[in-house]
Structures are given as structure tokens and as C-alpha cells.
Amino acid sequence: MVHYLSKAPEHGSTPDPSAKLATQAWISRLAVPLQTSKSGSLAGLTFAIKDNIDARDLPTTAACPEFSFTPTESAQVVQRLFDAGATLLGKTNLDQFACGLNGTRSPYGAVPNAFDAAYVSGGSSAGSAYVVATGQVDFALGTDTAGSGRVPAGLNNIVGLKPSKGLISARGVVPAAQSVDCVSIFARTVAVAAQVLQAAMGFDPLDPYSRDLTMATNPWPPSWRFGVPDTLEFFGDEAAQEAFAQAIDRLTAMGGTRVTIDYTPLARAAALLYESALVAERYAAIRPFFDAHENTVIEPVRAIIAKGRQYSAADLFDAQTQVRACGQQARAMWHDIDVLLVPTAPTHYTIAQMQTDPIALNRHLGAYTNFVNLLDYAALSVPSAIRPDGLPFGITLIGPCGSDWQLVELGQRYHHATGLTLGATGQALPQPQTLPGLLPSQAGPTVKVAVVGAHLSGMPLNSQLTERNARLIATTETAPDYAFYALPGTVPPKPGLVRVASGQGSRIAVEVWEMPVAHYGSFVALISSPLGIGTLVLADGTTVQGFVCEAMAVQGATDISHLGGWRAYIASLS
Image (cartoon, rainbow, N blue to C red):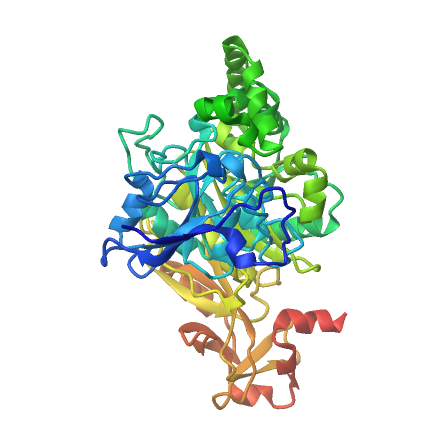
């Protein structure tokens, strides 16, 4: 028998986001963690599941106590994780029946944001995102119909992977809108999310929407194109608008070319999800229970689901045709771009604001998510920035069906280029990991090189990297064993990095680029004395080839070690 600790719902009360934050994220937590195999690709990793996903002998509530039942077998995806060696810690809170993008629509209490408890966590997979962001588990499962696996990730500084529809079995998952539901993955790094995807995916003949998909296995080329909507709405949130502009600049520095796309068909498809007969699928998902126990469902979830009763079969076919038309119109953009870039969420609201205006503000959070499953795309939400007000901002990379591995390759490079820490833990990002699913680069062997000055992204000599098909894979620091100087008389201005006694120097900002070995010789040939290539020790203790300077050359040079990097020095000049 499985022993667990359950949480009583907070009927008739207004949740206090500052109280019992950890328990508000959980609906039931195992007294003894559940592991069925001690070996496998996920051995040693702990996880949680959203409480609309079955785990054998644990109640499934979908955040509605009256709906609760105890399954006799685990959802197919959960069983695959068990088989891979992962350990389950419990089940997490959600917007009731996965109906919402904000995390406040639960009788078990509103799940707060991991960075500021006054703000929403995002939903509906609110608890899963919170327990990952706060380091309580290594990864968690959510579900995603309209953005529930992405919005909470973007608002909590974690990764949210929404696979292509049908890639992961949804058998044993309480449906929200079954034809467009996906099981999603939350993790603090892209590499862990990809590792979980590899273990979780697989065709399931007992799931009517499972698919045996052909996956793209080659990463996008070093020079790639990313689409940006021609109309962008941030609902007056200037901090989010500025963070998105920085994301565009970062992708450009990584080798991407911005292409403006027509957002009209995507926005039209997004509107159809709740403003057409498509909402009838939410009613169909729980119709027997809802017809018998409608009054046990909380508002505004009740009103949204009840709306599905008013449509006819003809209305549904009409709405489905409109979605197809939007997809056909949007198809043209993929001739011009490799990947689509959008904000994960255009703004952030407090719990109080959301509870005052729950329909309109929830709709705002889904401005860039609702269309993705309807149009059969894959998506990956990646941390992008911490705003000046201390709140996270995330971006979402969207690709065609089957582009999941390409998205995680680009997403890992982007995440490491931000230099952000892991979730709300304050821990540094580990080094990028080898990702599953992709074939080895057709460019052959590669070499990593750390740059500290004029070769940094956006700096005068960065083109020497990009024209050799180099990719930015990490933004980090050296170990505190270096002195940093502005070398006089260099054109363009260049710094000199010199190794000093262990612990007697400073941490200096670096970018780590990966370049085909075939081009490395011509790159090194461009480096003139007193600079050269040597071995650098990074902050995490690993080593990489990188720019160093002859000690004699820094005599009389300005010591800028206290600034911590070349960008800070250049900024200080102005």
C-alpha cells in the first residue's frame, strides 16, 4: 500500500499566498518516496506529477475533491518514468480541471510565484512549476492544452517543454480538451527536460491521440532565422517589453536572423480556443461528472465548462474548419523561418489582481500560447531574464511538429547564454550537456573556445567566430584566479587575461563558443601577440581553451579586474 499525506481543500476561503507556500504547491505528498526501479536513465532523479495524472494507489483529484478517484494503475507516462528509475515524491496543485493559466483556481489554495508570493505562479500546472523552481524535485510533469506547461515555466525562471502532440502518451491523464492535450515537462535545465522526454516518449496504441512521429534529428544551421510577430502586446508592461527586446538581441548575437511574421492567423486561432465551439471539448472531457455535480466545480471554471453545452455539432465542425484555415495561412511563415520566438507570457499579475478580474487577465497570459497545440506545433519555454522588479521573464521557441530535439538544442544554448541561475534556488547553471535525439554535427568534430574581449557577441571581432560556424553555448565566468587588463594601443581595443595565484585574482566574464575543428586553425591564425590561446579554468572547475595574454604585455596596462569583464569596462568608458 502507498502511504501519502493529503491536503484538505480551502473551501470558502481566500488563500494567503504568504502562508504554507510549500504545501500549497502539493495536493498529496508521499510519506515514503515511490521508486520501482533503481536503474535506468533517470535513476537518482526525483519528480512530481500534476494531480490530473494518475499514479497507482494515489488519489487523482484534478483539484476537485468531489471528483477524486484512486486509480489501480499509473498513467503510461508515469510508468515509463518509473521504469527509467525516477522517484515520485507526490502530486501537485493545479487550476481545477486544468482550466486556467494562472494557478489561483483551486480549492486547495492559490499557488504563489516562486520569486514573489504576491504574484501568480502561472497555471494550470502551477504546483509542478513551483516545486521545480524551488528545488523540491528535479523535474515535474504538467499538462498543456493552451499554455499550461509554458506559462508557469516563464513566470518561475524554469524550463517548460511542451512536446509535439501525441509524442508522450496521455493515457491515464484526466483530459482538458483531449484532442489538443499534451503532457509537459518542467525542469531547471533544458538538458534534464530533454532527458525526461527521451524516457517518457513512445507510441501508445491505447491512447487514441498517440502518434509515431518522425523527429527532426539535425540541429538548425549556424545561421538560422527566427520569426517575431509583427504585432506585440505587453498590456502596458514595459519591463516585459524590454526583456523581450533583449531576447531578440541575444538570439541575433547567437547567429540568428530576425524575420517579421504575420501574427494574424496565430492570434485568430488562439481566440477560437475559448471563443468558439472548441470549448465544448472541455465539457465533453468531464460531462458525466459535470452534469451530476456541477455545483461542486468552482468559478470561473464552472462557467467556462458549462459554456460548452450551448454549441451544436455543426458549430464544432465550423470551428474546426476555421482552425484549419488559420493553420493553412500560417504555414507560409515556415518557408521564411526556422523557429518562432514569442514571449512566454506578456506580463505578470498579482494574485489579488487575478482574482479581481479572472477571465480577462487569464486571457492576457495566454496571448502567445493558445494557438500552439491547435496548429500542431512543438514549443519550449526557456528562462530569459530577471526583470528590474525581481520577477522572471521567459521566452518560448516554437517549431513545427517533430522539431522537439531542434528546439532543445537551441534552447540549451540560449539558456546558457543568459547566465541566469537555476529557478529560484540561486544555484549556478551547470555546463551544457550532450543532448539526446540529435545526430552528431555534420560539420565534424568541434572545439570549445572561451572569449573575453573583442570576440564577445556584439563586439567588433565576433564575426571571426560566426563566419566559421561557431555557436555560442554558454555565458559564464573564470575561476577567481585571473587578473584582467585593458591593453594600450590595440585596435580594436582588446583586453589581456593573465593567470595569477589560485584564489588571488577575480572572476572574469567569458563566453564559451563551439567551433568546427576544421575552422579552428584559421581562427587561431588571426590572433596576434601578445594574445594567444591557452587553457582557462572556469568557475565550476572545468577547463576550456581560451584567450590568454603574455604577462610582460600588461606592464603599464590598466588593471580592470574589479569590473569583472570587458562589457563592464566598455560601459564604464561611456
